[in-house]
Amino acid sequence: VKLDVAFTPAEIGGHAGDRTVVVIDVLRASSTIVEALVNGAHAVIPVESVEIAVARAHEIGRDQCILCGERDTQPIAGFQLGNSPLEFTAQRVAGKTLVMTTTNGTRTLAVGGTGSRCLVGSLLNAGAVAQMIRDDGDVLLLCAGREGRFALEDALCAGIIARRVLAGQRRADSQLNDAAMTAMLLARRFEKRLPEAILRTAAGRRLAELGRGEDVEYCVRADHHDRVPIVRERRVTL
Ligand code: MLT
Image (cartoon, rainbow, N blue to C red):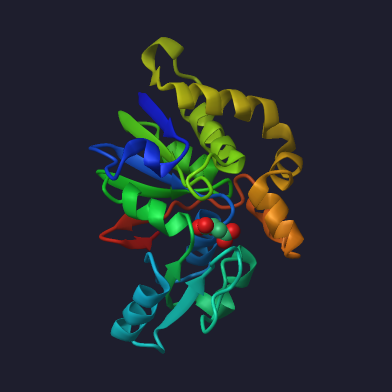
């Protein structure tokens, strides 16, 4: 397998290339998408701005959909839900189309969507993602990062997925870029104490500051779900 990691979307320019891409934004967009779809949301439509989100919701029909997302980690005025996975209960989202805009995650999904296949990865579904991409010859684990910069929680998730993809394979049969090697080293170092490490990241501290430490505790639950969302024509479904 050829397995690359990009720590930020800028590293690959606007195009993911002809390969499987896994978009990772552990805190919190990709975790929230996984949670919402597992809880029965019909689809998630990621869009880049608040204005586009409102316009898309009107096109779809306001009673069929839910506007959700964040700016500066906070809920958006006039939207029904923020970006905490804990808000996306079956009771609220089952059967609904979610129109979502977030600072880093939805933009990264737009880049990831240019790949030949695009999946949504998080710690919540890390094992299922690794299983699904194991036989794909060419894979990119694309971290959202934070405002264009490296984010440790995404790198750790990429490293955990990479380690699982490569488990049981001969190292000589795999081709990794430097970021993939680094992500795997980080994962090896921190895998057993993810909550502690991720609560100390910039995004983790920001969430704790806003009283949303429980989101971090939820997002670090590795393998809590076994479903993998897929992005097709700018819609995310299971
Ligand atoms: C994002 O997409 O920027 C993040 O998921 C931010 C957050 O909601 O914590």
